[in-house]
Length: 478
Image (cartoon, rainbow, N blue to C red; front, side, top):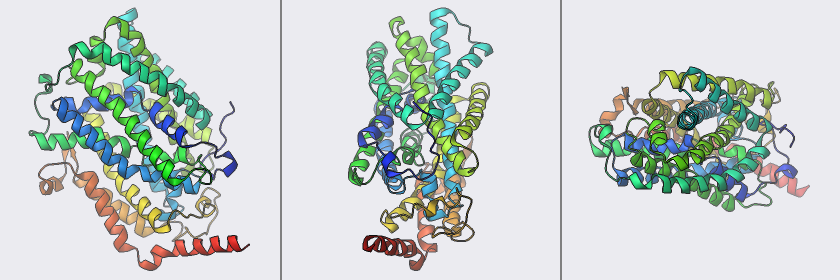
């Protein structure tokens, strides 16, 4: 299969041959991995019992999916990725905000996936072959996973889609075997080793779990969904079918692995660490399936994340090819893996990472969705590519390529979110207003969206839509 040549340029309709089923396959297959499973461990590690953990994950995932899924329709209309599409609101240069947010999101999740996958592989190989858990072993395993991940990401969308189709079936079978393997030791009680509620009482801890473990999953896709829907043709697939496929893919692709992570966390009594207890509690017959899950699943998920990182860097540096950009971000992600292994506490690092990026990314997504609603899904695809062609002009040029009002709205929303976040090592001053409950994503999204609506006049809100309607009428008349 040839290497994909497309970067963030507009995909011609004849190449947009994917459909809603492919979207479900890629969202399901790529997420059945330890990098997503481990998020199900967070609520038990926060001191919650089984039912509280499940309710937090389900509530957060469903709410996040309802908010995130409509973003898939943007790239269905623009035929390019979401960060480039956001140029309609932020300007053809201002859309770099989305590229940076997407780059950070994908970088963190890529490093996390390789990190936890490598740790479980080391543990399994140690039990099976006596492999020592030293620096050399970790270096070799991380390097192998990173190399396999780069190969899939460089070849591009078609290879990753084929991989996801296989993983959707194979990983589901491995998870079913995992339920049988860990069931004898399962408990619904809160784990004593967690030391009680992380934030001192039930509801603040429950809301933290709902955001960190539930909502963070869909939010991770705010810049990724367009990487897949840009290959779906709106002339052959309705927006409603694509939206339903996105809902289904996100809910299944996130709830199945995360709830498996919650189940195994209680079965393995993994209160303060996940990888070690998971391997120790595994019966001997499940070690090989666990090894396959840690390796193949990690490559599938990290490959898609790395692919997205390559697109975002390609959007930031138009002179770089997608393949070259992918190699560059792969090196950065691998460095983050080693730093994470040696320097970070898993629970603290994961919680801080997802909460911070959720607070920063949510207002960008809200502004992008407001723009989609205003223009009724009608975009000038050629004008979105002005920055990539290193030219000027077009209806999305605004002021020197930036829509200052949208950028300021995002920055203010992100700032409010950071002031309202509750991290293991930092408590935002606005937490006093929410009773200590982390509502950073709600406040950041609402504040950024309201400011954007207030700053944009009626004339500006309708300008792009009016021009595009005139262009559509002219095209029909011709």
